[in-house]
Image (cartoon, rainbow, N blue to C red; front, side):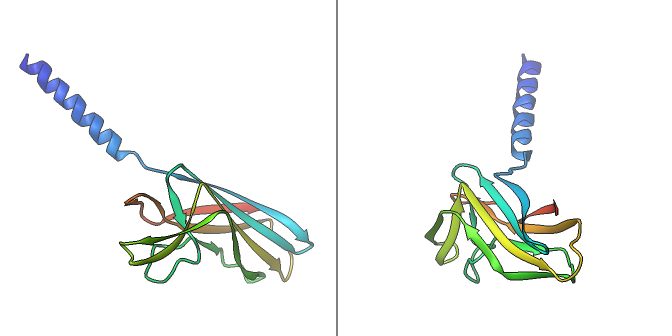
Amino acid sequence: MKKEIVISMLVILLSAISINAQILTPVQWEFSAKKISEKTYEIHCIAKIETNWHIYSKDSPEFGPTPTNIQFENNRSMILLGKAKEIGDQKTKYEKVFKLDVLFYYKRLELVQIVKFKNKVPQNINGIVTYMACKGEQCLPPTDAEFTIEL
């Protein structure tokens, strides 16, 4: 009888450890490029966000949550035309933890950055989107989503 109880307790303990060890990935990214002219492209970074989770706007206030940010691999022949545009249903909410209003998106966020190449257009464009996902009082650490887009 004692042996069965010990085995049952071990199974429960291992199950709890396994559940806690799962990596949460509430945001899935898709990356693409749309050719506008010979040397100009729109880069699209689309976040699909699980229900009840959100990510923060690139325009989040200083001293607030980690804003969503696109960084492109150093390419001296590439020029960013303006700032990335956010497309989605932006929300504003006062968050006690930061003591300020924050800007965020549920369900979906599309970032669009226009880039132009001075010289020959490369075959690929590489970069990283950094973002922070939260659900209620739970926030995951800032996460990097690396991308390579064929042009």
